[in-house]
Image (tube, rainbow, N blue to C red):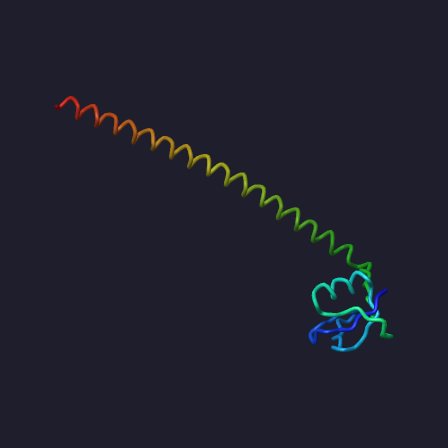
Amino acid sequence: MALVKILSSNLFAGAGFQKLEAGKVYDVDKDIADKWIRSGRAESTKEKGEALQFEVATPSSGSQSDTSELQAQLDSALTQVKQLQSETEAKEKEHADALAAEKKRADDAEAALAAATKKDK
């Protein structure tokens, strides 16, 4: 834990995203204190401070069925993405082949025109 004096007037933290008061000292985790000090939102201090609690909520047991439904939707979306990617690749190949054929036809036409022009002279 580290003691920091808040410099920023717009800093929120803690379990309920409570607004931290500028000029007040808080006792927070060392990693968080380092991050705030590097960003200029706080400074290290030796004064006594109020402990800031960070809580982590645990998921409820009912979320397991929701997860399987979401996973099914995700799998379905992934299948659609793969199908669309393969269709796109096929279309790109088709267009590239058509472009190559058209380029060959144009080159042949230019060559025939050049040959015809030479014959006429």
